[in-house]
Image: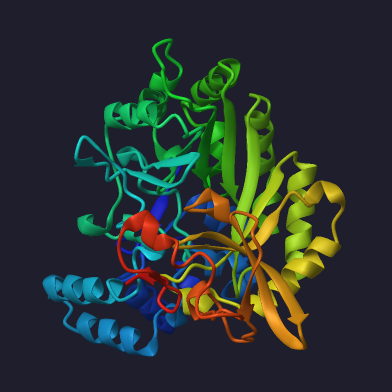
Length: 445
């Protein structure tokens, strides 16, 4: 299949465009001027049920919906677009709105970016001791865009919001000096949009005999298996990629695809099954993850079906996330209580081989916080939480408690059940040498 993509500039050329009402077209244009929009022919032809597209989960996953903006932001952007020819005004209004949507949640721009010899590595994040994230500049787009994506700032053309780095020289030097880092995650965007020759250049330093890093696992964060499985089947360099994957594994490096599947429909096409088979045959693992999303997968039956389908294809269920506090969170979020109930019912409905999955998890400023559920202490209902990952590794697996709040959707709305602060908050001061983490804003104040 030949790859064809559609963005805001050419979405009227989508073959199914004549199904859209004038209202839907207007909504796509308004919201698509703020949040990024891109869809390809595989998603259109294989994943969306066009007989019921307005309620289709993949349609909501890829096409902007009016409610993804607040009424005030929607009206502001729509008003600007009435000045059809004033592109400068369009950009100014869209950028103003974007900066109000918490474009860099969880301190990822001011707390995660390391430096070496006084140089900030703007294409690298190092939040957790063992894992370093790398944003190769050639991989900072995707085959299609997810409407929930917390990395939407990578795609909107605002350079001050974007993570990216071309060269690996400083990355390698940094990793050589940080032997505690065992895992390198190529992320984006999607590294699998790169052609083989470009991708190989990023990988080669870690396969060289001169490699002095302690990288034992290379992870690739990708939606390609869902959105463009032909990357691994019939694309001109598909076989080159598979041979490189084999080479990575033969060097004794664990190669793990962190594959994003948000709905079972993404797993059932012949192309997706074949892509998974070919990747697995190289010796690579495929681990699966997605946020829990209203309008898309907020049902325990969907999750249990998805986990079983993944295991049957020899993939490893890895994470259920909570929708992050950025972009269109208000559209996708379910309460933490509801998320736990969906998680628990889905988890109960699968066998042990599916229970490698962890969640529901919030990737917030201090770390990955798992919502373990609701309990009662001294007659008082409380939330029980723990860190799966933390900026301080000593926080991991230490249970802590928050006041019960049936409306809470994120860490920044939780209050300690006992005492004035959560156990980790004052410790944050020792890490950053500044004022404490404020759980109300999920920021360092």
